[in-house]
Length: 370
Image 1 (tube, helix red, strand yellow):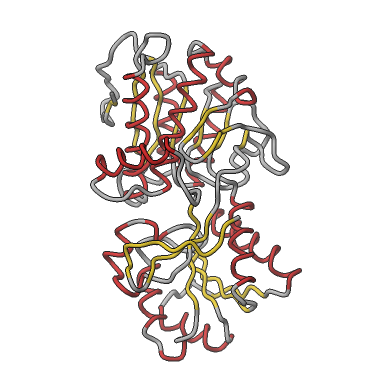
Image 2: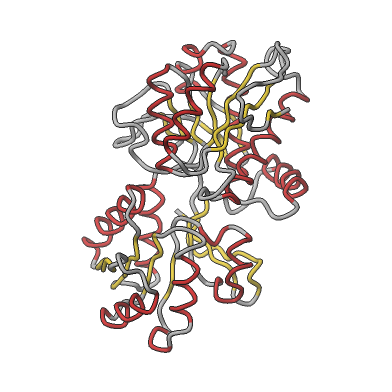
């Protein structure tokens, strides 16, 4: 079962339930489609865990809070969920929001399994209480940089909005590409007229443009402008953060949204568990599930196993991360200490670079794996 967001904070619940707080972007300016997929995965795994007997005979229950991509709202939600007695936190998609939630959870002694955010510095100091399923940004974006080099791109323009997340991504790309003969050209988005961006691309003779910007805007306007500028007919557009993964991208851009490579965290072939979960998620979502939905499912699968062994005790749950060994939808999940990462990290979920096939935009092509 799940408890929807409650403005009053009042909850009607089974007193025997083991409660998991779920942080999910469900309203704008959050990436609502990602939030919907994340929540679908979380809810499906809770239902299946309860069908299998729950946690030591007690049902699992999600207590969902909408972060709306707002770090302050997420921090307040963590405080509320801690007061409500949740055994652990799960979820979140936006990296900057997850970082705020992780800091607050750590301060409160509340275990947090982050589903989907990738920012390396999820907490400023190493912590025992926070673990993460998604690959760290430095890992995934280096895989993307290797794809660019393999595709022959050496002059790569980056259109980046001001953000810790986008700045971190640009730095990872620059540091990885420079020693290998690549150049990163940072475009000025302070006056983000798409026509001005096109002029800069033409002036710099870039062969690739990476969109480190919000969705749907300004990403959609930038794609349309570049696609329809004759000077830029040969340029590759890329979106490492994954904007083209979701159906809204295809609805807004049509054929213009195809052939834009992005990062996706799925294996080439799903395991029998992954295939079964994919079918159930497709039925729940009424569309193909994104990798974010699988991240949600795997989050609860891990937490259910940890809570069975820890008895829903927060301190014991936080001590359990290094002992986790759970078969998830995308491989066996174990956590370890990874250099440069301050939290317990699954190293690594599978990483793909994919795009939408121009001949069939609803079909994805795998271009590179890492």
